[in-house]
Length: 115
Length: 112
Image (tube, rainbow over all chains, first blue to last red):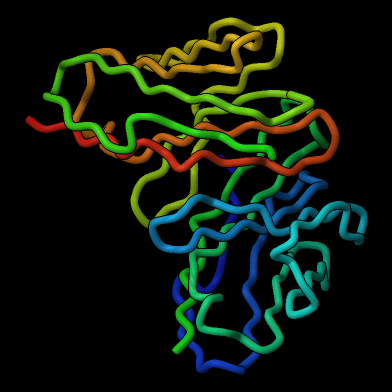
């Protein structure tokens, strides 16, 4: 069964460093998402991406964050200058269509630790 | 403000017993409600998706109900198994856009 994959599974970085989290969505999906989950808290929406553009973003997704689909398979989240509070699990998701009952399939997550 | 609240926060039951988890939401305009299962350190996995017109939906031993008038949903787990130990998250989406609003989850532990 096709699945969303994410790399790395765990990333440790120093405060102020740039990190890139990578995701390979399900191949025939057109909509891509990033979510984060701070330890012990709710999953929070960051951004949705379609047709090489951001279609929706939350207040969390400020200028420190960017997303890109550099080729036909990868979808990346870049954090330019990491802060301690960026430590969280980051989940990538993809869906075939938009809205309605289109199911979003989640990857296993990348645990980001900022020291 | 669009919110999803779940109860209880945690629950311990014995293997073989049934349980019911609750979800209340204020997300508007409502599109659909989903229940996800999330194992520790893993991504959420969808159990059910219900739209405005659906009152109940089953997936094996999982049965979800939706009352769109009172903005409440429940997830009933029948004949629990040890592998049901996980967090169960209620997620609501609005009619416009793809953003999902997550509840805080109910952490279920099934003991032998």
